[in-house]
Length: 162
Image (tube, rainbow, N blue to C red; front, side, top):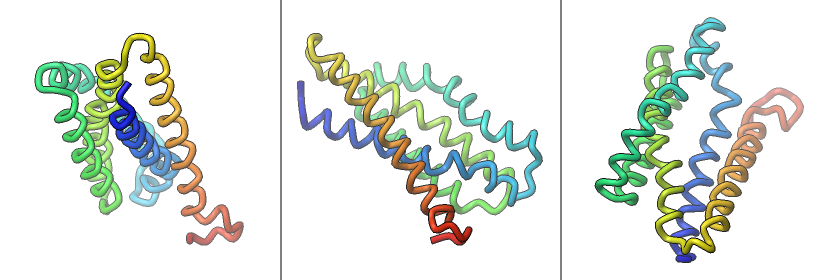
């Protein structure tokens, strides 16, 4: 098992899930500020998953053909761009575009990292490597939720943001 590769993959999974953990609890409130109805908020939440469903097989084929590293790097850069766009948008249509783009690039990361783990681990260590990635996902999501909670101002108890 290549420990350096697993460390980088662990951090990658942690950061991707961290960003999701920060954004997801605030998504509905952000959309509401931009004038979204309840139905539109539901569609906004769904667009991310729909794009993941559509693009996961595409990224899987591309990572098999051109390699895991390029797919992961493209996914990270694309997802980072989508997150920056998410933070900068001032209208509902752009919020849909930002979440859709995040859904397009996210499956270039998560499943490809798991495939990479399978590539760099011996069969006897594969379960340990996959478990490590699962831990990274869980820890990242929980840490993201915690930071999102602190940022929201709920941690201070007075409703002000930090």
